[in-house]
Length: 191
Image (spheres, rainbow, N blue to C red):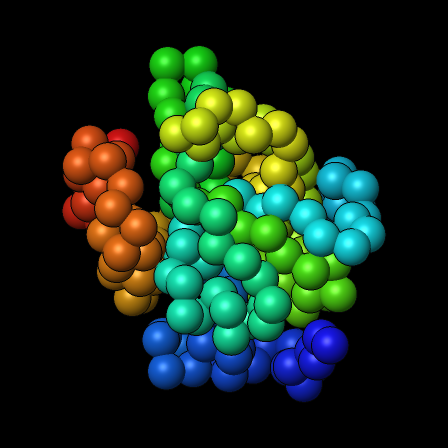
């Protein structure tokens, strides 16, 4: 039986991850005006869905607290994209035919989607849901849900965020070249 964690008030410190790190996904100043909140692009799943995490949601213990009942399926990659830090200070992906984003694949109960959407700031316009084709060491896995920023504007990383992403990359033994690219983001240079 799935028991959803209690809803967190908007703007909270996301208590579901409290001991890992605190952030409020508040928007950092941007020269561009805020766009209207986009509608999710991915269909609403029923039952279970595949979710590709490439940021702090790679941390197994924290993600399983956020989405109880989620199963870690292993390392996967998203070809034709690169990871960036978006205007709000958190990771996103942009199309780039010459790049690959490494992360992990989760099998998530659909009942966790509202909690995940809230955590990712979908209603605030920080992310939209989308789908992308992912590949595992066993080969193509098919379409998985991803969160990506609705705008390509870059920004500096939120305090403490990239340390969590790097810890997740290390925990999941992502390729050294990808971990080095993430470290370059932490240093403020392009991956």
